Image (cartoon, rainbow, N blue to C red; front, side, top):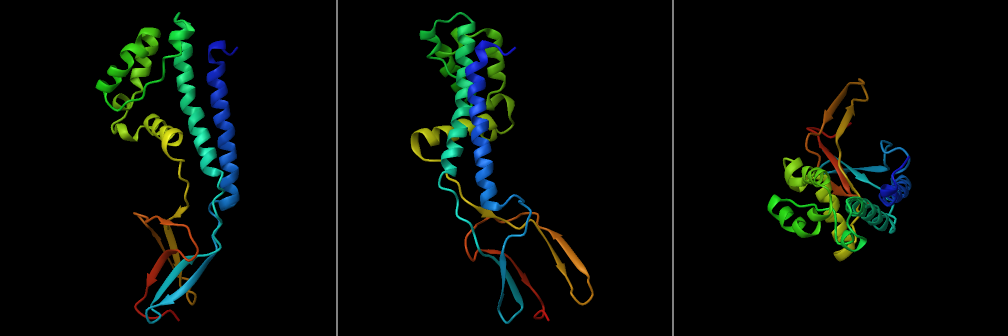
Length: 216
């Protein structure tokens, strides 16, 4: 049976999952149900016919509601953590007045963490819960704190709430290609180790090939 202390936490996570489904539906409309399907392209010949440039065409615009859905999803995930600490405080005997001042801390350094939790978190939750929260801090659980998923979640939520909408843009990059010699059927397959991402827009260059002689 689900603990009554976790009802609001689970409700926030459930709402985030709802937004994820909406985001998934929006992306499927944008790129199609098969992300590996070939996108419409055109081939241009340049520079005395020895270069072939592959360009995108028929690009679909991004749904303007997509950044809003992403922001709502981020906010519900982030606030689920705050709801968790609030409930931990209540379970530990704190009054609603003091529990309402708590939050789930997410900091890059131990110094900043200790400074912020000393009066607003640590006094109101159990030592066991506090230890677990401290273990998952970016500075503690990750080699590169700035790349911690909880840190990225927190920062994106702050941007969306107080500064700017989360920006959604389309980019693409070739990751591999196969060239086939029509006359012989011979093929050459190459994997691109460092793909270069470019904006998805009408006429955008995806990849170009340079030949010693113009293709027959």
